[in-house]
Image 1: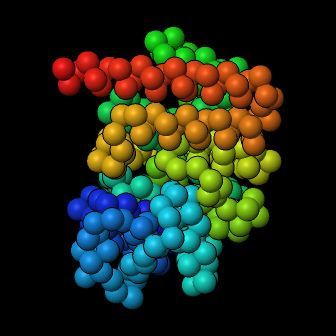
Image 2 (image 1 turned 90 degrees about the vertical axis):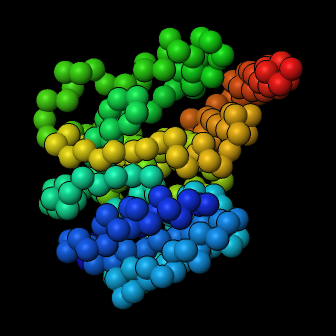
Length: 278
């Protein structure tokens, strides 16, 4: 059976738009919406859409994105779902045929992502970055020169199905058994680096990109509604250091470098905010 999991946080209108988009797709057996400890009235707005196919759940013990996904996946497993789409609320699916194409590749595939169309271009997977590259990408002003250093070349995308090191997790398709075998999502990060973390866990199983399926991600919606500039940077920095330490096995000198850059950047962000107010 095939599931479709949506994670909501303080953004019921966007989630409802996606829910209306997919609720009648015959290729989906169960649709689960996890309201991930929203602080607004999202849950009450979502409840009217519940039926035998659409299940509305609420978590009230924290809002880590990975924890919300794990909660929803374990619920889907209890209904015998084998594979599931996992989606942010701010994703637009163009047609049911796109989902059917992804489903058709499921035999032998553990984790599969489509091409993600974003405001800034196309996201078609990337190489998991080294600690050295992560450090360069963390430096103010300098990071722009290294943003795409772990991207694949244009000539790489010559086939419909390609093995890559990482894909965008705003929308992907995966085997629930495989996610269970790698220990589910790491619940110690929020919003950032879930993709590199889970992709690191999946390296031995394999991750694939489907180049002839595309979905749209309105990336600014969820994050920009719920975090200010300093909070977004602090969250990103914490997740980057955690990934480097736990999954890229960074040493104390590297971790100190990340910490130092973080403190200096936050200082200048506060100064910039003060000057802007004045």
